[in-house]
Length: 196
Image 1 (spheres, rainbow, N blue to C red):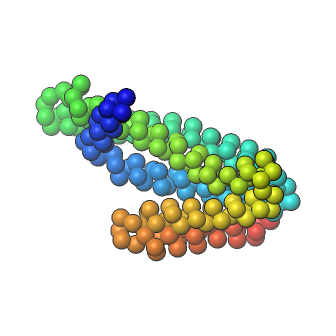
Image 2: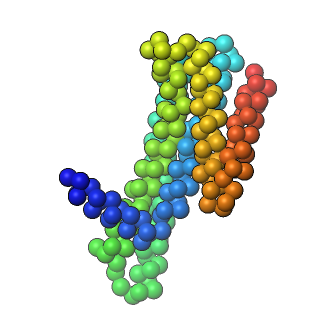
Image 3: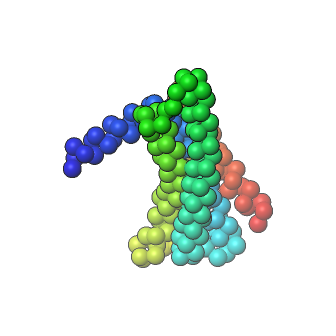
C-alpha cells in the first residue's frame, strides 16, 4: 500500500512539473486560504458587533461560507483551467504537427486541472475550519464564547501571518508580507467596527 502511494505521489509530482502547475497551485492555495479566513473574520466580527455572537452561529456561518466558496471555487477554476490547458495543448499540437492525446503531457494537463481545482476549493474551507476551532471547542463547553472569540482572533492573526510569510517567502520578503497580512486583518476589523 505504501509503495502504491509513493508511486502515485511521484507520478503526481511529475505531472505537476510537466504541466507547470506548481506555481498556480501555490498561488490558489494562498489566495483562497486568505479569502476563507477573511470571510470567516468578517462573519465572526459581524456577529460580535451585532450582539449576536454565539458559537453555533459562528461555526455554522463560517463553515457554510467555506463550503460555498469551495463549490464555487472548484467549478470556476476547473472550467477556466480546463479551457486554458486545452488551448495550451492545441497550440503545442499545432507546433508539433502531432496529436498529444494519451501522452504524459496530455495526462499532466488534465490532472493539473483537477488538482488546481481541488486545491482552490479546499483552501477556503480549510482556513475557515481552522480558525473556527475555538468556537467548536466552545460548543463542547471547553471554552466560553468570549474565550472562543479571543482564540478565534489569535488564530486568525497567526494564520494571516503564516499566509503572508508563505506569500513573501519566494521573494525573500516573508516577514514583510507576514506583517502586511496582519495589517490587512486589522484594517478589516476596523472597517467592520466603522460599519457597525
